[in-house]
Every structure is written in C-alpha cells, then in structure tokens.
Image 1 (tube, rainbow, N blue to C red):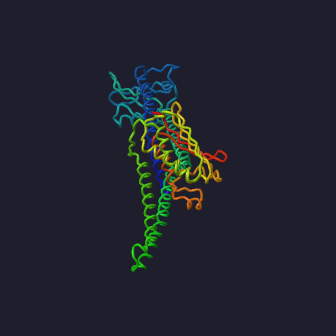
Image 2 (cartoon, rainbow, N blue to C red):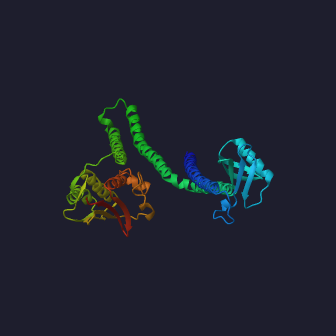
Image 3 (tube, rainbow, N blue to C red):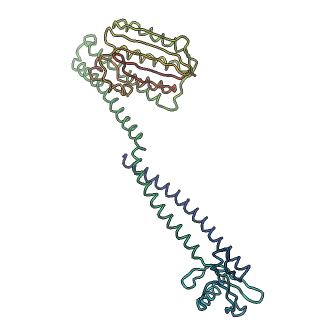
Length: 401
C-alpha cells in the first residue's frame, strides 16, 4: 500500500514539475524568439530605408544584408548592393522563390543559408532586402538544446530527489497507519480478556442451571467486575476519539487551577494514606488560566492516580503547581521501583505499560497518560516525563491566557 502511495506521490510531483517546466520553457522560448525576430525586422527596415550599404555599418546584421532592385514588370534583377560576394544565379533563384510565394516578408534559402526577406514595390521598380537569419536560427537552436538538456537533466535530478524524499514524505502517514493498527490490535486484546472471562463464567452458570442465583454470586460478581472494566475501557476510548476529533471544542472559562489541584489532592488523600505514601504539595496561590475546568481536573486526577498506582508502599509523592509569566507548570513526582529509561519516552503511548507484571497489579489499560497528553495539547500545552534519580516526574505545562 505504501509503495503505491509513494509511486503516486512521485508521479504527481513529476507531472506537476513537467507542467511547470514546460510552461516556463515555452514562455522563455516565445519571448526569445520574438526578440530575435524583432532584431531581424529592425535590420530589414534599416536596409529598406537605406539600400546603399556603408562599408562599416553599426549593425552586424545590416553588414551581412543584401539589397536588390528588380524590374517592375519582369522582376529581373537590375541592381544589387552587398558588402559580400554574391552568386548571381543564387540571387535569381531566391528572388524567384520570393515572387512565387507572393508574401511581403518571410524566409528564403540561398546557397544553403537562410535569409529573412522583405519585398516592397517602389515608384518604378520593386525592391528586395535580404538579411542573414543564421544568427537567429543559431540562437533558437541553442536555446532549444539548452532547454532540452536542462529540462531532462533537471527532471532526472528532481525524480531522484523525489524518489529519495518520498519515503520521508509518507513517513508520517506510515507512522499514523501503524499507530492506528497497533491501537486497534491493543484495544481488541484488552477487550478480549474480559469477554473471555465473562463467557467462561456464563458457561459455568449455564452448567449449573439448577442452582439458585444466590449460590452462583461468585460467577456473577466476576461478570459484573469485567463488565465494569469493559465499560471503563470503552469510555476511555470514546474520550480519546473525541479529543482527537478536530471539531471537538473545549468549554473554556476562567479557571482557578490552584483550587482545582487542591481539590484533586483531597480526593486522593485516603488512597494515599492506605498505601502509607507520604505526599507533599507546593501549590501556588491564585494560579488561573482560561481552560476547560473539567478537562484540567481530569488531567490532574490522571497524574495523581498514576502516582498512586506506581508508587511503592511507603513511597513518596510530590505535587507542585508553579505560576510563571506565560505558563502554569503542574509537576507530579513519585518514587519508583526502578523504571528503565527506555520506557520513559513511551509512557504517553496508548495502551503502553512498562511490563505485563506491572499491568496485572493495576487495573488500568495504559490509556490514562495518553488522555492526559491529549488534554494538555488541546489546551495548547504539552506534557512530558523524566527520571530524576529515585524519582519519576510528570510535568504538564499549560499556557496562561
């Protein structure tokens, strides 16, 4: 699929470049041809105005010109003025061709050389002026060769560059597609486990159809637990899809982030106490910004919930909200049990968890931090994680508006 996409990209790019090059070359060619033709016409007009040639004319085209006076009735050559030796028979052949064409101007070949001519009647005779078109034809020929060489060479080089950079151009599409495939696979895997448990417990209930509902509460409670987990997962997926939708609009209002963070801390006070986790908070006063209050409250809750899940019993958690000139910085740090640095850059990936054993110890699906990242980015901010010794820090930065 991506090979076809790359080929289409190259084909479209080369087609567009060929059209642009052709239009540019045709424009230059026509402009140059008009200029060269104008020079020939100017030289012919000078010869018309003064048929008697000077020995050293200023215009080299005039220097190579030939003036011919013809008999009015027979168009026989009566007089020739030229600084170069001319063959009488060739002149007569050229004049005959001019008379036969019946046009007042054009081109004629004489002795293998192309001439531009001008024919006009006089008072008692006809006149012909000839100016060599060799320079004109050489100019146009050289221009055409230059265009062909430049065009073919340029298009060849651009084709090579397009081929080399096409992979880079479609790389974001490939990554998005791979992420989408991985997302669907991970979501399917996460749904498969609870569905399997629900199906197994339903089979157990069916095999004991004679039992009372009360006697089978254990199997029903398992079904209920897995249904709750699936509902939570589906809600998280819907929230992610909603936040990824460009048309999704935030409900913005002036928000006291300081109060919001303190309120979130109160919600988690009891869970932290149960795990004997020491929590310290440094929250700036009156830190405000224009934001979606519910979304920011969820962001703070996700970071605190993440700290609660992955801080070992008896560990420490630090929460800080700093108010700077142009941004707010919310930092939630917790001690950890040895997180490998290679995992840090992937913590905000969807369904990413450091290890299977760790995921079994927690009830999450690896979507919380991905949702937190989406919330931060929707507000024009960003979120990151870094290791600092025994601590792992999650930093959310939001613009002050």
